[in-house]
Amino acid sequence: MKLSITESLTPGERLGMNIYNERGNVLLSEGLTLTQKMINRLVSLNVPFVYIQDSRTDDIIPRPPISGELRREAIHSIESTFQEIKNGVKVDGSFAIEKAAVKFTSLVGNILEELKDSDELLTLLSDVYTYDDYIFIHSFNVTLYTLALGMELKLQKKQLEILGLGAILHDVGKMLVPVEILRKPGKLTQEEFVEIQKHAEYGFQLIKSVYTISLIVANCAYQHHERLDGSGYPRGAKGDEIHYYGKIIAVADVFDAVTSNRVYRKAMLPHEGLEILYAGSGTKFDTQIIEAFRRSVAIYPNGMTVELNDGRKGIVSSQNAGIGDRPIVRILEENKEQLVNPYEVDLKTNLHLLIKECLNVPKNSLPL
Image (cartoon, rainbow, N blue to C red; front, side, top):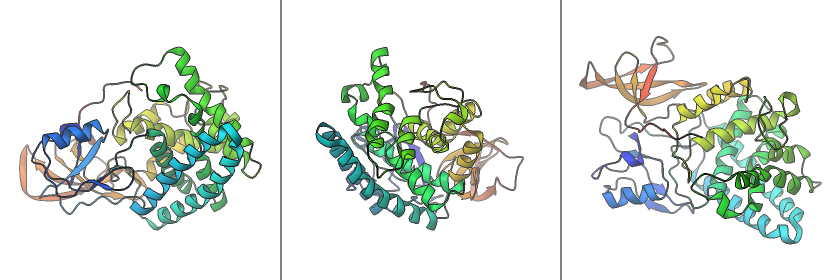
């Protein structure tokens, strides 16, 4: 099957994978023939990409990084716990956070087990879900990216547990930011931007008040928007003033932010998100962490239509472990002619070949 951006879909195409709502219920079923009304609905629900059936690539099946059951459990747990934290702040926020830590530590352990059992590079484009509140799905996505990155960096189990807890709770301070600011579709005023920035301080204060939680977790919430050159917030910390885990979560946070649909910007593709990170390599983000991220994530996910630098066109059919930007491509078009017998080219062993561009997707012209 092939990956298509939702806005480029045409009536008559058939879904290659189920689309779920955030409760885990099937919204549209695999094999369903799309109508214009369905397409419009998907666009309105901020579903950026879907998989479409294609006779020449039906054997290309994306593999979700974790099971649907664990994914649903995780998102539901994050949502219910964050809401409890939001309500509990008025009474006893530390108690709500303490309860959350027990639940989330167990959740991190379950996610780690499934990630360890998978030999696939991480891609979240195979998880086609709609959602009402970006914060919960973002916290889950950042946790997946962070744990995959931590495993690639060879962190020990206890370190991964602390890092994972920090990733889940990195945005918990947003529960104290007015929702109308969080969901504002237009440009923020200076006052609103200052209020958004306060979520790092809010999260730090909430978490550090719980003596059973490592202070490192609180610093993950405090420092995930800090940058190596001091251009971040809330303190403008530089270099080694930023905890290593804060540097890791910063990379995962930015990547998920730019590759997800937001109320003020369309989603970028994974390779575009990686370009954003590389643009800040060594100045805003730790270069070693970015390189580890590139090895952990499928930059060109299975099903993506691409053009190589020699003019051949095809669809990414599978990944090479540890080389997220050098996949295997099934060639469908050569010398501007469709092939009767497609064949595969491995970019790992054909180093002179590069992916020139991703096809059938609009260019993202909006700034971060």
